[in-house]
Length: 203
Ligand SMILES: C[S@@+](CC[C@H](N)C(=O)[O-])C[C@H]1O[C@@H](n2cnc3c(N)ncnc32)[C@H](O)[C@@H]1O
Image (cartoon, rainbow, N blue to C red; front, top):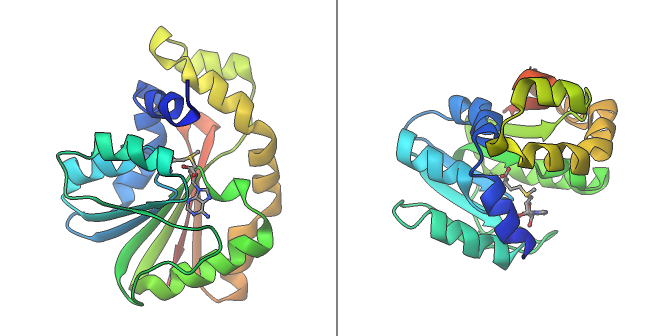
């Protein structure tokens, strides 16, 4: 099975909605949202249906976007294939929110800082970047205690596959350092019973 199809199915498990919940909660109704690394589209599907936002998703993978196209068929979300490292094709001051879920902890620090500089320019005044990342903390027994169900088996694969990099992400504090350096408001909240973290940077 292709990774994009596997990931698309994993996003349909109940725990995944719980993982995305703090991002959904932070995006205001009728706002203009850009989702970076939108993958197979679950966040945009929920947000378009429940919050009537104007949503755009970008991704570097055409296979992921093919999955997202299927999920977003009855929404007004716009999807775009982009090249990593290339400038995004949007005007300055366009978006109220930029979400980046399950993406940045895979990317090198120097590239992340360039990406954040670009996102800041695309945000309207008072706009927010919302970054969702696994923490890698805890262990399989704690994970099973909170989430065990035959419908949630994907969380065990997600936890094991992301643990090492997400612990590094937590130790590096890249977003906090970036915010201090650029005099931006930074906020962090631990979610998903300790297994995820949502960080926000406000312009
Ligand atoms: C683990 S998936 C996360 C999908 C979705 N955001 C979610 O949380 O369910 C990571 C996605 O980020 C995409 N990606 C990686 N680097 C990217 C970049 N520089 N710009 C846009 N998308 C990127 C990958 O192709 C992949 O679809």
